[in-house]
Amino acid sequence: GDGLCYAIPLKEILPHMPSVTITSMVASQRIQAERDGARDDGDNYDDSDNATTESAERTTVGNKSHTTEVIQRTRMELESGDLSFAEQVASIQAVRFVPYRLECMKGGPDSIMWERWEWKRPVGNDDDWKSAEWESPNVLLPH
Image (tube, rainbow, N blue to C red; front, side, top):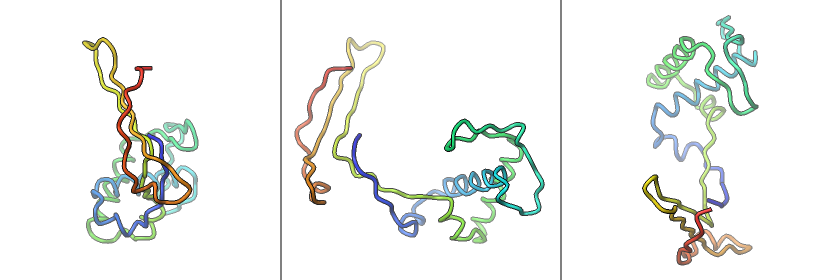
């Protein structure tokens, strides 16, 4: 789909987020900080020989045992209330996606052709489009 994303204050959604999501996001940031050398918590672990960064956004799991340990430690801190809100804010970014065009394809090995549907709503210069009614769907060619 096409649309715009708006930042949401973390305080609004944090109570609704699964603890496993919070844990994994914070733990991932901790591991990345260890690799970047930005964090010194007394743990001299270095898995740089086992981990690779394919781009600035994607880092592979290096040492699975160490990753599991960091995740478990973070989970225990969250459950005991010792995980600071500041670290959560530094690790999690929440956004709301407001679409103005959506598309859906369905089909499979037994289909002659994929069905492809598109929904749009008018977009104007003001924010009224966010609550505008969706137009009737269009049936598009499969590709």
